[in-house]
Image (cartoon, rainbow, N blue to C red; front, side):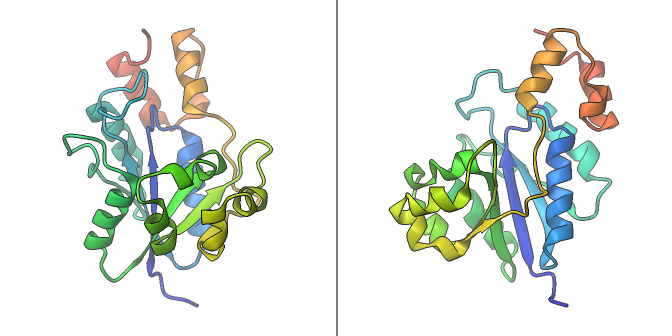
Length: 203
């Protein structure tokens, strides 16, 4: 059995964190023997995205769940900056913290399509393995073949096993809350109670 020598970085808005996020992370740990931890990295409020909840709330909600799993870590590395870090910068900082580990980056196929436009894209795909979850009708092999940069480093692009899927989105959950619909079984109880207690997403 291979040693656990790999850290998976799972970045996102987590606005709010829902069951799908934690389920994906747990499945990655189960499917890849070498993965020691999944690090959730919520984006900075300064990231240009409409309706992004304050850093503190998103960080707290993630911590409520991650603290109960020894293989989950929440990092405020992006939230602590005066701007939102580029992905390559985030991965470099994580690599400094885990010098003796491999660092992989987890994304959806929607992001893979745009990866070549990201800051220092070639460095990103050449230095780090990219774990990709297929979404909707996307085929990762088609996306890679159609893009010169991705095709050059296709050995670093790993398609997640078919069974690992995200069924619900945070966008859907937010709309349900706003429309006063129940979201209780779409997220961990700790997150559900936190949202209720702080009256979040109602406006």
